[in-house]
Image (tube, rainbow, N blue to C red):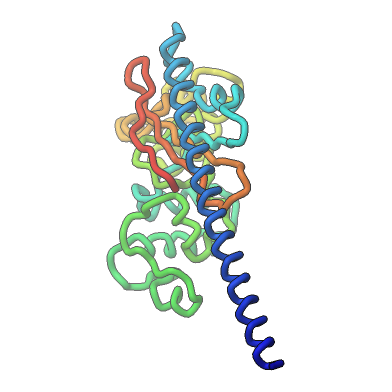
Length: 288
């Protein structure tokens, strides 16, 4: 009799625990769906706010130039947070050659050994072969470290950069990205600017100083204020520099997060906005 009662009690406990687990799973799914819907609503409001501001303004170019300030200062909706970033505020990691990568990393003020090691590791991650560079790392190193193997192709996103050996805690997302656009003179830091042939550190710092003062960043005018050798380097490469830089964001990337207490992935929307005359066009909209 005792064994029978014990068995019945164990069965009841198992059924109860299973029911509770199923209930929690269902509740999490419902909460995740609600967070996703909430983030979708916030993202729609972001697009509408950008669009209406451009249409209403007599100076839509000025609105577009400072769209991040407009969106983050005006608020969107309770329960959502925004991250707004201009394309071109960083250098495109997929377009940089070895010398340009070394210039960019060298401008961060770290050691030469760190610069050389990370340069080779980035190139090994991106190039199509499995040959290891002098200071680099290929699949064997990542396997030993139990980490994802190199893509051996262009970086698919900015977040992927942190997977490269040596880039884990380097904070490179402020200077490197996976955008395909031109470098934005009104936003890019010194390290991103020196990755352009023809812009040395002196000219890059003069560009940043001009925008801090609130001056219009005309690169020809700024280049006229630097030393003769810095100016000469710019003039030798001027045509290429002009093709690779811009004063106006080509696109804005906006990440909208619902702050409802669910799984981190549940309520995150990424949209990319491009300006079409006086309208804000959505060129990408996806749930992350």
